[in-house]
Structure formats: C-alpha cells, structure tokens
Length: 304
Image 1 (cartoon, helix red, strand yellow):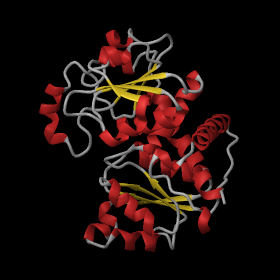
Image 2 (image 1 turned 90 degrees about the vertical axis):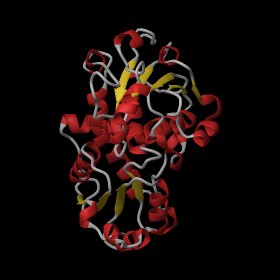
Image 3 (image 1 turned 180 degrees about the vertical axis):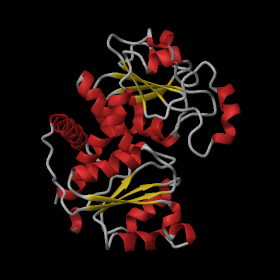
Image 4 (image 1 turned 45 degrees about the vertical axis):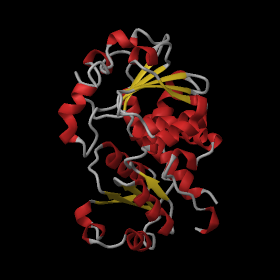
C-alpha cells in the first residue's frame, strides 16, 4: 500500500480535521443507511478481526460495516489463531497482511498492538486495548455532533473509573478542543502521561457534582472492566457515590446528553432513569459504532 498506509491505534493517529471528517462521513453513512441508499464502496475488500477479549458491539459493528460496504470480515478468536499457541505476533501480522486488506485487533496490551502494527503491511485498527478505545470515541463524537453540534469549546464530565475510555476522552479533548472534567475515586485515576499531555483540556476534580456542573455531556462506564471482575466488591466500595443519577444530571447544562459505551449495570454506575431517560443517547451511540467504523474503514482503505 506504499507510504500512504495509515493505522488507527490511537486518537492521535488522526488530525483534528481528519477526526471531524470521519465523524461527518459517519453521519452521512447513517443517513444513507436509514434511507436505504447506501452503496458498496469496498467490494472484495476483507477485514481480519483478531479478538483476545470478548466483544458484542465491536465485533458485530465491524462485521456489518464490511458487509454493508460490499466487503467481508473474518473473525478470529484466540482459539482460532496461532498467537495463542506462541507464534510471535509480528509473524501473525505479516501472514495476515499477505491475505487481508485491513486488520482490527482487540487485545489487552497496547504495546502488543503497536508491535503488531509495526509488522503489518496493511492498516491496523485498535478495536480496544487496556490503554485506549478509539473506535468507541469516533462513535461517541459522531453521536454528540449529530445531537448537539460541534463539541469544540463544550464541557464534558467523566464519572467513574479512569480506564481506557477515560484515556480516550482525554486524548480527544485535546484534539477536538473541549474541556474534560474527570471525577474518579483515589487510586482509579486515568493515565498520568496522557493527562499531562492534555494540559488545560483535561482535569480531575474532587466530586462527581463538581464535574457535572454545567456539563454538556456526561459519560460513565462500568466500574470493573474485562479482566477486573475479581475486584468487583472492592471497586463497588470505592465507587459508591459515583453513580450517575438524576440528581447529578440536574447539575448539567440545558440539553445535556448522557453516554455510556455499554454494557451497563443499572443501579451501579448509572441509574435506570438516567440511561433509559430522555437525556440518554446510548442507543444512537451504540448504533453509530457501525457508521463511524464504516467511515474509518473507507478513510484507511481508499486514501493514497
């Protein structure tokens, strides 16, 4: 694919203009899908999907995206690949990139993903690592833009665990120019280096109330991510007081939105009347995984 090949491992792999371009294209794809006018823009192209972590939304959205674009997707679980039997990930990357046009990888270690991409001859997409979840970020931003216009200059509250989603919000605040205010319990802070790089775009505050004050968007996630189930009881203690409820949402700006990347645990990180209420856009957000990823696949496979 020559020198123009691009990966999408982190939000930083896109410029602010490219980020907005992909969001806008995702919205176009959604409208075309709803009106039944979508076209097969990537015929005979194949996406290889390597998953070391389970997935519902990411797997389904990528498979359907390739189908709707006229291409094909192959799902490889840990049992289906030689990585699980000790093949160096660089070798897997080299072999797969001889056969497919683009590869999405969901794995634990972000460093392993970077090693995979360095050896690949085709674009590699981060389908989630322990550090970042940039595909979800494209969907979240598309959802905000669709409902409330450009997020530049707006205020976003992150409530709960300083996990990979929180880290992705930190990167995106810096790229798209919004203010991110994070409330998380002591010991559960986001990545310190990413926070430092974001400068004035992202800050941690003492309470969820303070974070939500005047926010245009409130975002949360589960308290125990994949692989942390053993810490569930300890986390429930640490996160008491970090549940997004109607009282918290009353601190926000007019017409504020609520988002959650799902799966959600009602009564833990969010109350049912919030996630199922009028401020919630979580179903559009989930659906936009499909359309934002179509825009990303088109961007990676048709440029250069």
